[in-house]
Length: 300
Image 1 (tube, rainbow, N blue to C red):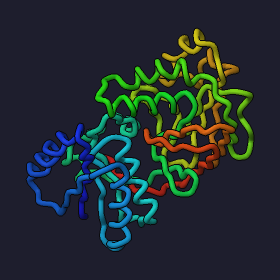
Image 2 (image 1 turned 90 degrees about the horizontal axis):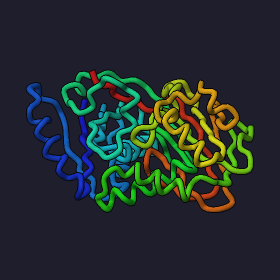
Image 3 (image 1 turned 135 degrees about the vertical axis):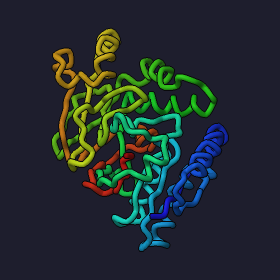
């Protein structure tokens, strides 16, 4: 197996590179590897897709050394190239957003030895509008407003960016006129607060939005919350954070939960979909699940 370590080399994250390189050098058993450092947003997509096309026979593990955005770029590059089962995704969690790995509690995503001794498991991925992908959570409405603001604050060097994003969204993201269909059935009323499409379970650093998610069942976890008062919103937020909302009577009448293979979204005004923390603008979106499309290395 050839290991390709893809390191997020943004200026504010470049300090991670020496930590990763030091770990590689300390592995006592020689293994075949190379290092690729990203130079800008989306360069990992191009690198991975070109690599897969140019070396289709080589068994390769692409190690996303970063957060959810880096994982998204690596998995997107694999999908765009039509990577076969001899191409694998792995994660070294060195990023500002690390929701994807919360699906695997107890696993060490900062240890290269655990990665090398890990096992491959095929997982699903969501395809959005033909050429975009989400391997963790796709969300829109309140959640996307939170993430969009958090991304802006991260670039400015702020801390606790998701908390500040929530404050911003309370005033600017609670009333959304967006139509949603799950497997052809409309599930929205006049307005909605938020909607999450889950392949995994966590979003926003701490919110267990899709507690029943299984990332290899060929289904999207659709969770849609209708508009509610600010007081009620604050009263249910802790349940939503803990992932206890699906069976909580507090959410009766305001929360719709479905499992679906396809979700269609329409807004009369431009909105942003958040795909694993990356923003995709538009008005019409088609989201479908591709079952067991990515071979993922689960650490030992």
